[in-house]
Image (cartoon, rainbow, N blue to C red):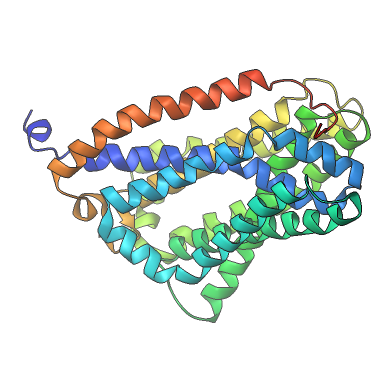
Length: 335
């Protein structure tokens, strides 16, 4: 009872909310970033269909990123200061990528047809830049913001692997939302992107315990090892199952075409849960614990009231949008 009266549970609630926001962002905005990256391999007509497939959703998907950063800023201001101080440059570059995406998405619909390709390239560059910056930030966070040549190379490798991961879920989205030649192309894109995604999972899984004695203990000591053991088993199983499903879709891409997206989403969720559990109780690896970084209980209680109002609205309009625009994507038209 004392823990509830003292508000000691509030930091854990906000840490959980932040994890949920990051999970939702990685899956939802991940697929539209992936679609943007994959546009480089598509014809102009296919690009129109790809843009149409994410048009009703992409802007709202970014709301989850705003929510995650807002929680970090308000609920964990000390951690926010450490993160932004160490990741100032990649955050700025990510914002440049997001601006490029937003501007090019709007302008490609308003320019003459001969100029549309230039804005498509800007959308592709913005998507790739955003994805790689997020991968770089994830790797730097995993390493506890370590500096040096090897940490830099690790961050760049993970940046590329995260871009591959977003391409995988983007291709899975296109498999579900498109038909014909584009759908068949998306199956092949997914198969190729899955290899880069699997490499990223292996690299982060090896580096995480190697760089932190705390995380090594979480993965090798009893009873934590019993709690965590199902996660790597599930991840390996999902990767293997996705390979089988995609190979089967080369023969018949219309067969349960939603499966690659659901499997890839499950893979993202499993990986992020494994990372979150590895870091706990730290919010900054080996530096700052969740309870030490949190704002005053009175402030957190006030913020919680707002979160309980905002979250149902956010979830509600997201579900409504996906319900209204479900099914296969139609030909793009601006009339």
